[in-house]
Image 1 (spheres, rainbow, N blue to C red):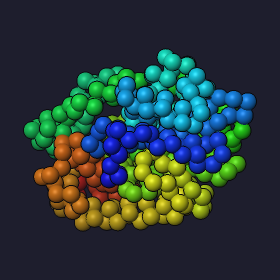
Image 2 (image 1 turned 180 degrees about the vertical axis):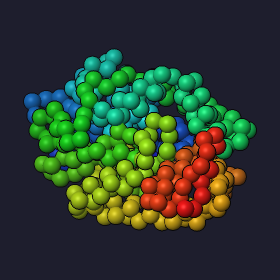
Image 3 (image 1 turned 180 degrees about the horizontal axis):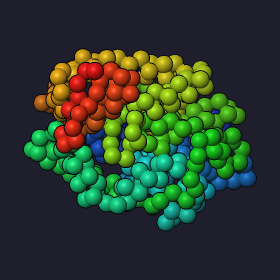
Image 4 (image 1 turned 90 degrees about the vertical axis):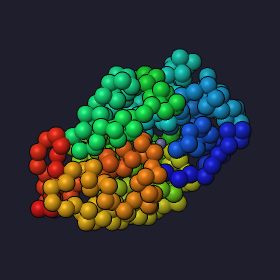
Length: 338
Ligand SMILES: [Zn+2]
Ligand SMILES: [Zn+2]
């Protein structure tokens, strides 16, 4: 994910996208992620609902307060938070906001499970991931390297459970707006986007970003075929047509339909490249080592390599569903062209 660098000293960028819908950009002190957007919708009768809640931390919480103030708003206005998914850059401030003002917190039913695994704690999450990587033939030294805790990783654990569970097509309690839940799984199992039907805009979370493809990893909590689910979700979003999208990171998406089509062709190309890397009975690790990543393998940080391995794994599972590859064995699993 490559995003324009935002300096921490920058004031939060606050922009009224349409009357009563504010985009608040929060700068992050994270080498992999320079900023995240929180969107605020002003309600008929007073108050606001936030879509996503930024990263946990004193500095980011302060930036959100400043950003709301620029819009003439305050934490005391927050009635609810609708989250696209449970990643710490979108869910992080939910706990602090609940302590401060106790808003409702809505997430998809399936995402509540993803959030629960984070609540279970970093240690369990790390052990689970180590076993998962072992099953893909990843060597022990690489597993240790890829699970090295980073200073910002501890933010993964401070989370509260959602108070309202959304299903596919659920409406949201956002007076003055017509917001409906579009299931957009793939990046996480219960990722959703919110289609605002009155003015015609989609709040995308990480489903589609203007500047980079979304990461679709296979993980213990990701569902059986995340890339297959993602491609189906892209078709649903493509059907919304030429309306703009507001993403969690980066520039606005001019047309969600056009961007969804680009994402579909990107992933189809990556599927072909992955298939070309499968030889005779290889582990996911061996196939990932051969994959022509745009960044050199040796220059990737452990965390980035781990994501790369999980993405290759997700593609192999979809190729298996299409009857193009098969797998054998358990620990490690091995893959061959069928
Ligand atoms: Zn995410
Ligand atoms: Zn994100």
